Length: 170
Image 1 (cartoon, rainbow, N blue to C red):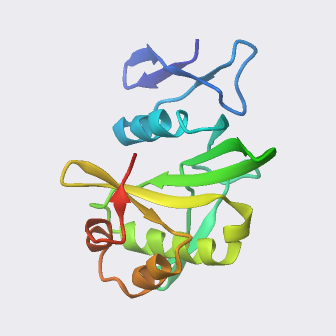
Image 2 (image 1 turned 180 degrees about the vertical axis):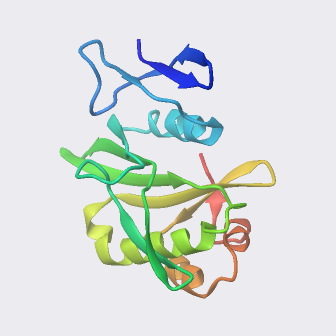
């Protein structure tokens, strides 16, 4: 069992099944927040689901990093999840990134993801950003041109997730 230390306390990390880098028992230790857990539960029930990857939030070859610009400086967003599924005899990848709207970098990160989707959409079945609006998870399909256009001209991310461009995440 993998343990995490917070201050003076230690606790066991929860384990999850079907991770790309699971142990010999099929378990992967990870601490997922409420939204990430909900995304995990929804995505792993999709037809054809095979396995998932928790994209590390640190620099390295094992981490997908996508450039974005904030205050005229380049930064990196590391989308939380890659989900792999079998579809028509092929393995396909879904990039799903739950992100909090209250953070100042919400829109710049969304802009970076939309630009990435514009240039790399052929590599993925889905590229989606998920956020909570008024207690409900909403999703933007960043492969859609109209969504990319709206992100490029938006003044804030919450407006996008509250609009008709977003769907309820299910």
